[in-house]
Amino acid sequence: MGGFLTSFMRNRQICVTDFSFPLQLASHSRCRMRCSVLHLLRCVRLRLCSRRGRSRLPLWAQRIQAYIKLLAQSLCFNSLTDSDVVFDSIFEPVFVTVDYVTRWFGMVFVCLVVILTSSVVMITYIVLLPLALTTYSPAWIAWHSLYGNWNLIMIAFHYYKAIKTSPGYPPAEKNDRPFVSVCKKCIMPKPARTHHCGICNRCILKMDHHCPWLNNCVGHFNHRYFFSFCLFMTLGCVYCSISCRNMFLDAYNSLERFKHLDSEKPGIPVTGMGLLLGLLPSGQTNFQTPAPPYTFKEKMFHKSIVYMWVLTSTAGVALGALTVWHAVLISRGETSIERHINKKEAVRLAQWGKLYKNPFNYSKLNNWKIFLGVEKKSHWVTRVLLPSGHPPHGDGLTWDVFPVKRDLIAV
Ligand SMILES: [Zn+2]
Ligand SMILES: [Zn+2]
Image (cartoon, rainbow, N blue to C red):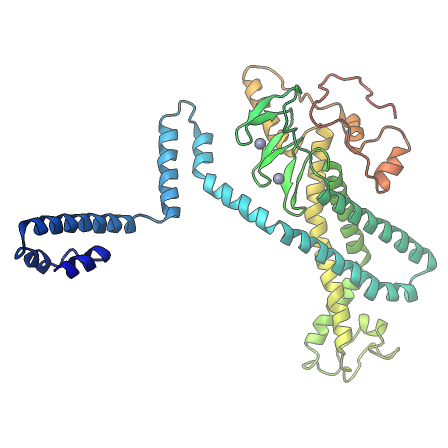
């Protein structure tokens, strides 16, 4: 029995449903029995405790349960609860997930921009340039070379600067700068025009938005680089789209013809890129019988032109709309976030019969001069039409408010 008890004490994995065990103990002395019963009760308690622990919900489920409980309590016992608070609270997990995914995919988007832009540049240099050199006049070659390369340099410069330049953060140490509110997440003073970015998880000076294509926030110090990148990328896409339009139509028609080449019957007219590529002998563009075979190189030539035209046209339209929208906002002296705030404020004041005036709107021309950093006439060339790394106007912490001097910069 002693051996049994020893092994029993060592091994706590005893099964509590083993009813023969107390019966065995009853045949021994009372003292030993009491001792054994005590052990048994302890084991039963341990066993039950471990069972209760195993039946607990997993950590993620406990968190969801706690969140739902907190959500319900904060909505029920909050005097400031309105439809906005309810919507924000319910969709908070969705916003957090979107922020997480955007943060994670940031580098993927940047690589995508670099790969797609590089592919268009490679097609231009490898496929189109040799063709242009043999068919275009010297004046057209000079124009395409100058404009195309200038546009490419402007795109690359502004994209690199937009990614690498910090948007600007409020100072972390104690200071006596004026502030308008306190960030609930950073627990830090927020200067005017500063907003918290959920993806970067910090406050951004004059925040416009978080751009996944840059994997960076657009704020006070890189807003100009972002806008210039959008503008020059749009110009580049429109330039490629217009320049290659006729080639695209020829290439598309040729691909369509190649597709049905086997089933093509004698007597069907053959025109277009076939002559340009030397596919067909000169003077035999009509009623060629039978059609000559096409090579892999020719097929790739046509496909690359079609790919380039479709990509640049689509990107040109999408980016063009974005650029126009941001140009309107800059003209009004507001950011994407301030657009919503100002709109709301205008509606609120209109109810009281008052007119809302954006305090950071210094008039259209001055807004552009401040945004582009133009301080004298020559800056329109050196700072706008050429790559320039000059810092923006002001430190992003304090702002002049309207009304300011009418002609802020004498240009
Ligand atoms: Zn913050
Ligand atoms: Zn951000």
